[in-house]
Length: 66
Image 1 (tube, rainbow, N blue to C red):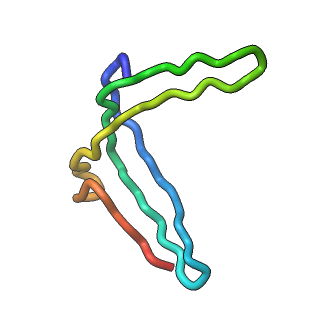
Image 2 (cartoon, rainbow, N blue to C red):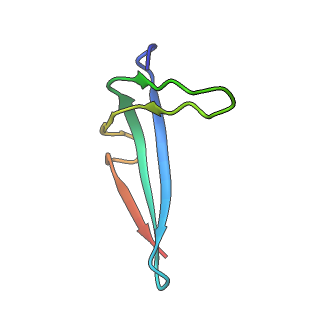
């Protein structure tokens, strides 16, 4: 977020019949909010982002069904 670089986000959703792989090949984080963790607890970070057009994939969002 601080360096204003780009990342890739990919995740898979399934409904028991079909599987959908979502690819956001180029995302840019638009903010950050650090949570406070107690002793021994995990820290959660909110990272809002926007999908940006990726020239190599020729899209900003790609969904593949399998």
